[in-house]
Amino acid sequence: MTQTKLTFGLIGYGNIGRTHAKGYLADTRVGRLALADPYSQPDQTSERVVGYTSPEEMLAKEQPVAVSICVPHDLHLQTSLEVARHGVGNGGSVRYALLEKPMALNEAEAAQIEQAFEEAGIRLMLAHSLRFSSPFRRLAELLNDKETGLGKPLLLVGNYLMYKDYSAYPAWKRQAEAAGGGVLLRDGLHVLDAILNVAGAEPLEVWGQAALLANQAEVEDTFLGGIRFSNGALAQLTFSNVSRAENQISLTIHTTVATLKATLEELRIWSAASPNDEDKSAAPGHLREVVEPAQGDLWANQMAYFIECVVSDRRPAVTGSEGRRAVKVIERLYQAAGQGCHLSI
Image (cartoon, rainbow, N blue to C red; front, side, top):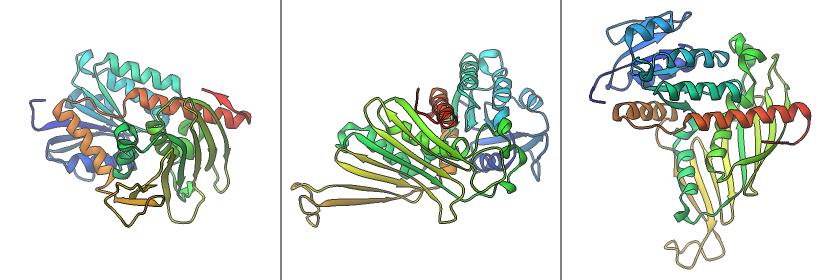
């Protein structure tokens, strides 16, 4: 991009939309932010921040180079198709889109979105925000780099335990048709995506159990499940909104030679000490522990990364195919839970 001040669009100005807006407005390269939401408008407008009630009007008048899509789950397909109609491949202005998770309610809709953006010349990025938590990002870097010698993943244990009172949610998040699912699709997807990003193989089989334990809703507040991968690795999923203890969002990976655990606060690595270690306090045959504290805020990291991709004309990570893969696995997990059996993918 030759421009230094760019116009960005934002469709959906609820809770997560405000997080996107905060990230955009913190970056001086964002010259103008155009918001579109029929129910919520910015508290103050200015030359830099403007509001619309219609996404179509915003896209046509403001001609943004990139757009965030932060609408309810059941509107992801409809809104994505509208943005695609304004893509550079269709004579419009949009070159990039940042789509909130989940990509869609099911794999078929996700495939439609992916195809529409590709045909419109729009580079799509999914807002799988754990990818931008420094401990989770570092975990992926270490395991995907074979030179680190940290071995092959054998057992991947993903947790998302955070108390949430569903009565405080907007009504659509409690409705099966609009939300598409509960804790697995809304929250657990982040950890599931982190697992798929480092497993080193394709998922072959899933199983699961969904339950509504403590809330009044049409969707689950607890999901337990598992995945078997083509390389023999297994993943265990524990996602729940009923835990009143401190939040536990983590991924622990046991490999052939080490154990790595990423949380929002830090990355810990336990591996066997060797005679060549500079740290002589860890004798051969004993475990050596390394701790790397988190750096920065994952939401700010995500938005800064997306803006940098737009400004530098770079293809972003967390592509449409990765978003579709996560939705596909989740769809099969729900089916396995409903049928009470193991299902192949």
